[in-house]
Each structure stands twice: as structure tokens, then as C-alpha cells.
Image (tube, rainbow, N blue to C red; front, side, top):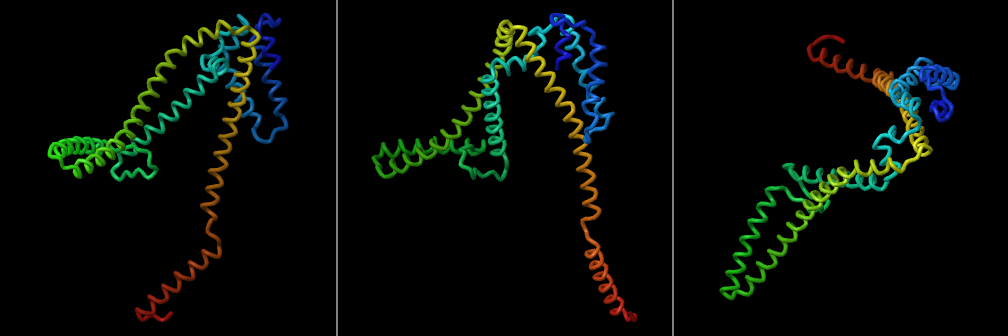
Length: 271
């Protein structure tokens, strides 16, 4: 985007955003002149929308150049702390998986077919009651020197505790992930502020131009997706209309005619 690069005063630009708009619009029309996917109206519309959304950014570049303050927080995190974003994304994904598990456990016909260890709340309550009872019975068996019963209750206690421990581990993991996400989100402002201080104008220019380019591509892709959806709707309409062949229609007609003839014959009419 050389013309946008020249917009900054430190690159010898005159800071005229409106002149830049006219120049870029003429350039984009020429570039897309031979394309067969978007109409000229769509090309101009997509480009105009992109420019309108970035008007404030372009004016800031024209006024003060490539400053790190023009980079959105999310872009700074992505360029300077990709590992932080990756960790947050992994935590959110895992937290969503756990939330889905707990939600599924709340369903009436839930079965833990994947052996995840998650338990419905009523079952957790029931197991805790059974555990308490088993421990009480074990104490009685020990007191009365009933070795066999004491051992049996011990096995029951071990099995119940194993199931509760597995479920508890999932709950603990979910709480830990939530806490880590909250902690990281609180640190984001500090990380962004520290990163801005380290970003020079050259790197700021690179990050900002990359963002502008990605937004431009995304804008045109949104128009293409809209056309794609329209094509799919049209194809589905054709499928609904022509999915049944003429042969099938004639066979159904003949079948219906034969049934009608049979009814008429039963009623004594000559067919």
C-alpha cells in the first residue's frame, strides 16, 4: 500500500485523506476491471465501506504519522505476545468443553459414554450420602471385629471416592481456568502499555499496514460470501424444483390413476 504509506507526514505526504480516497478508488477499479466475481458497483461499495471504517485511522496517520497508539490492543497482543493469546484461546476452548460436559450431565438421559468422569448433581449428592453411610458402616464393622464386612465397605468407599475425585478434578480444572483467564485479562492492559513503549515507528507502520490490508481483504471476502450464499439459495431452489424427474412424476401419475380406476371399479363404474 505505497500510497497509504506516503500519507504520513514523515514520508513526505500532504495528509490529504480525500485525495487519497479518490486515487485509491480509481486504482482499485482499474485493478478489478477484468474480475468476473464482483460487479463494479460491488467493488466500489466494498472499497468505500473499507475507507469509511478506517477514516479516523487514516486521518490520524496523516496528522501524526505511524504511531503505536494507532494499533488496536488486540493487534499489539497478537504481534508482541502471541503466546499469551494462544494460551488464552486454549484455556477458553478447554473451559467451553468442560461447560459442555457439565451441561450434558444435567440432561435427564445423560450417560457418560466417553468415561469423562463428570457426574450429574443429583448423583454427586447421592454418592456423598452413600460414602458417609459406608464409612459409618465400616467403623461399626471394625468395632464389632467383622473383618469381612470391614473389607467390603472399604472397597465400596474406595470406588465412591474414586468417582467423586474424578468429578471434583473437572470442577477444580474449570475454576482454575476461569481464574487464569481473569488474571491474564487483567494483565492485558499492562502488557499492551508496556509493548506500546517498545514499538518504533517502522514496526508500527508494518503492523498498521498489515491490519489495513487484512481488513480490506476481509471486506471483499464478505461480498464474495454474500454472492456465494445467494448462489447456494438459487441452487437449492433448483434442486427443490427439479429433484423429482419426469419419469418419477409419470410413474406416480400412473400409480394414482390405477388406484382411482380400482376404486371406480369397486363402486360399479365402468373404467
